[in-house]
Image (cartoon, rainbow, N blue to C red; front, side):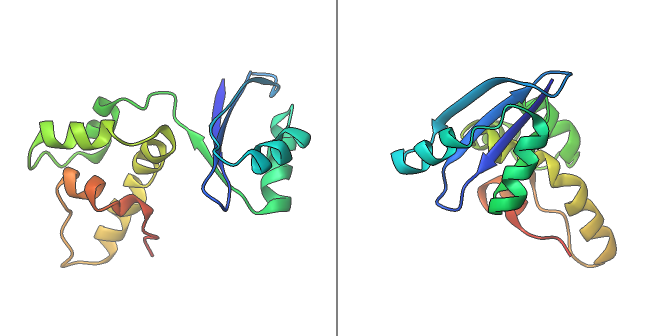
Length: 140
């Protein structure tokens, strides 16, 4: 199974789940507030993973592959900087939507590489990584 979140330019999000044969088996548009955008997407609803990639490429949407495990424990293990308040960090993390949790986890390795390449910049406490939305930075 593969799970993706498609983010529109107006902030709407839709989630797609594909089986091992790359056929869509689940669709959730609960994070789409704009009915016009929802109608547009439903007219172009991808039924295969290839169609989802095509939709992303043709319309310049952000497509995020979501890890299977979005638990706080996964984030805590990946971030691997056990400083600050774990409870405060857990509350901040649990307040994120699934797309932001996915991005937060996915960007950890880029963030660590950025720190390695930029000596003198220290890793922030995990709750600051979340509260200041550091995972939205482009680490170059």
